[in-house]
Figure 1 (cartoon, one colour):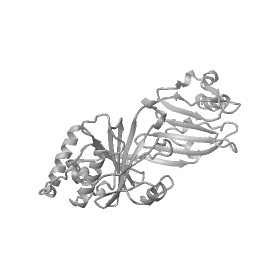
Figure 2: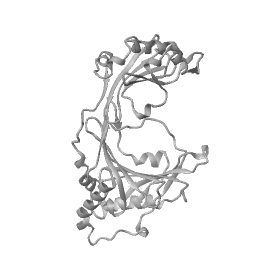
Figure 3: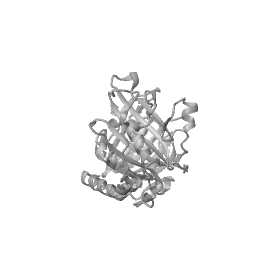
Figure 4: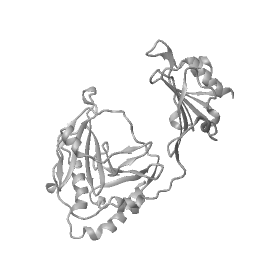
Length: 358
């Protein structure tokens, strides 16, 4: 969302909130309820990260409905609603401009506190008892609303770089708010005034001013035919875009584990995973997709491929066998990405040669 749209949004929100704000003064910092920061680190990276199947930038009217009162204490850089393929609203992501701190990033997410369970995605209700009873964290009380406030040392002793994330999570009006501030070299890891301000102001807009977010304005989004389907191998072969770039012969020692077709705002690909029976995580991923600017590294053209070229991507792995690093091959303006754990150069070339020669 550009600066002109943001300015227009702010003007509309101001008009919508002027009557509510009349006669009410914005609380001063002395009135804010303090946050107790629970310190831990370093942060654990990895694990499953949800990726939106599609999203829409919020309009000015939607910003006014979903983020009422925000214009009084924060400058919104942009906001987007992220959805599952069946139009389930997964979250609203909001970018906040932090005054006088251009190197620090601030974001707020809003999610429904509702059980969601499908084959590809699941989420439970927010449970603060876990953090109190299991983790031993202290919750803060902000105008009667329990708030989990955290300070996370991202790198710990592993790096001389001082980089911290200040977080606050709370439940209000059936919505889970999660605020994140990423800060380099903070003046204090025991207190963060900007986090405290955001938490207090968001809660005050509800409990004092009666401004309640309305997520229903984000219902019924336009879904332009995006997909996230598990296919049979026969269905994959019939795919009009990428089926012709799948090998018809399974590499020796492997069987097809699963086939997945994804078409979203960020991905358009067909992936086949081969597994070696009884050998654990010895997978061989064959992904066909539209090439992107991020595919510039490790790409070979089909006419340049040979067994000797594959050998340039080989190295000694954890086992006695020589295995192949991942790489990409461009065929007819279609990208084939090969990612293996223990497939040999001979196996990779055998399956690749099928597709190049057909």
